[in-house]
Structure formats: structure tokens, C-alpha cells
Image 1 (cartoon, rainbow, N blue to C red):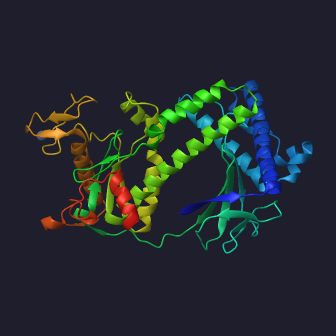
Image 2 (cartoon, rainbow, N blue to C red):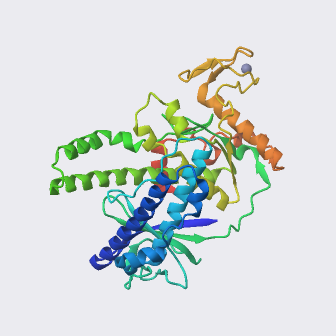
Image 3 (cartoon, protein in one colour):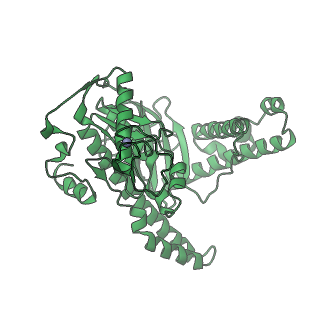
Length: 418
Ligand SMILES: [Zn+2]
């Protein structure tokens, strides 16, 4: 299993120049290679064989043509070739499936800058004591700030500079999971959640409400965007405005990620198995067509699922994602009747068959949990029933009095146990 550590790094002026140069060269070679492919594609559009057999220039040839490329990390240049290959492949496989995929795009100076280098012969090193990192082709050690330590060998490092001008190094190592997944789970430590955009995770017993950091700052963001648009192109004021905006976006993003880490930490700590729907964010946007754009920014579902997966795996616990076409909302969790008349904005509904009244999200979460239990059983995982009502799913792990987990609860928890 790959594990990434993202460290904020603090290059000095000289190092910054070298890093910036590497970003520039990587972008340059990527764009050059793309240009070549674009031209060839334009000429031989329908001749796939010709496209594949065409002798594109190699990194070596580019280096001969453009001397300056020799001054930067060659592994970084090579990974640009790999990046382009995969973008190109995606484009073709998209065409094949009849999807509308654009041709790979040129890299722009305006976006976040990155390059990836591979660790070979110990050319990437970390001194945890002095908090310094050594990158290929950069002769001096770069300072970083982070407390984390690991013992595994470095596989590769992605260096980035975001739009606020901050540098990070994302260090990837391979870690063998020493945890074997548990083969028997306690029934009351299995929880299913419905994901609903105005909130976040909903179950009968608890819910996690997204504080929605983007929406909170929406006014400020709007003001800064307006300010930016008034500034003259190329002026220093425009740059300053740009930086302000990028900083605010960063700050919001960090707060959101922090919150998601806390939620996933709590879940992995208290439950043996978490069952969720395998959502795609595009579908969710559609589902929430009435909600603002900030929803997309506030609900990083994939990010959340990724960190939760990792945290559960590390403890030998289970995360189950239910097929997104499972009719979790439309199905009566009591009798199984499927209500095809249910509209997207129906928050409550009554089952025609058994007359029970449902809360849309809670009913869905019960269905998601049942579906998850089925999958556990199919995988021969033993479920230990616990009939002791006092230990029921009801917020047991969070203390008797806590049924609803919201932002305030997390803040309180933070002070005590987190
Ligand atoms: Zn029913």
C-alpha cells in the first residue's frame, strides 16, 4: 500500500530558483511533446497504426535541442513523458468508448506547478532530526516543517508550488499492511450512512454535519473575486489580489480537510465496519441542482472516502461501498416495497404497503446498512449479535448523552480526546 506524506517545505531563494526552473522545464517539455502529438494527430487522424508507430522525439533528443533542460532533474523530465502518455491513452480509450474527451491540454504557468522525481540510488533523502530534505539535482538540503517520521524507503517525491507560492513535497513510500482484516464483527459496531449534501453523513443514531467552510466564507470570496476583477492586468495590485484569493482558498481547503480527518478518525475508532454509498460527485451535483456551486467545493467525497479507507484498513476494519445504483432512498426499509414515485425533494414519505412513515435519509441509511450486511455475509464474515440494549448502536461509543454528532461535538472532543 502506498502512503504519502505531504510536508511543507521552505526553500531558500537559491533553492526556489532551482525548483521554479524545474517546474518550468517540465512544463516546457510536456508542452513540446504534446505539440508534436497534436500535429501528428492532425495529419493522421484516422490512421491509428501510423499514430502509434510514429517516431516521436525522445527526452534525449529534446535535451540536445534545448540545452537548458540538461540543468534540471532528468527523472522529473522523464515523468512528464509518462504523464503525457497516460493523458494520451485516456484520450484514446475515451474515444473508443464514445465518450467526449478533449485532447490533452497544454500546461499553464498560471496553475499549480508540480514535478515528480523518483528515488534511485538514494538520491532523495530525509534528515528527520534536522528536518531537512534532499532532492536530486539540488545540491543543498531544503528545510521542512513536520513532525512525522517514517522508516520506509522513499519511492517518489512530488514537489509542488501552489498558487499562493507555497512549496510542498509529497513523499510516497510503500508500507506493507500488517493488519489482517477482522473476520468477525460485532453487530452494534457496524454502521451504514446515507450521504446527503446539505448535511454529510446520516444514520438513525448519529449524523455528521458538514460545517461547509466554503459557504461560510462565500461573501469574502465574492468580495475578493470582485476586487481582483477590478485590478489592472499585469499590475502589482493584481498580483497581490491574486495572492490574497489563493491564500483564502488554501485556508478553507485546509480547514475542510482537517474536519474530514477528524470525522474519519472518529469513525475508524468507534466502528468495525462503515458502509457507505459509492457516490460520484457529478451525480451528486445533479442531485443537488438547486444548491450552489460551493457544494462541490465543500463535499470532497472522494477525498473523504480515501482517508477513511486508509484509516479503517490500518486497524483491520472494513469499509464497504455500495453500488450507486442500489435504490437506497426509494426502498422501504421495513417491507422492501420500492417507491418509484419518490421525488428528489421528498424528505418524508409513507410506504403504500406497510404504511410506515419514512425520513428519506434515515430510511436510506438503514437500507445501505442492510445491503452492507449482505455483502459481509457473502464474504463469510461472522457477525456477532449483541442483544444488550444498553450497548446498542445508539451513540454508545461516544457516551450515553451524545446522539447527535455535529461540529460543536467535534470541537468539544478535540479538546479532550482527539
Ligand atoms: Zn413498507
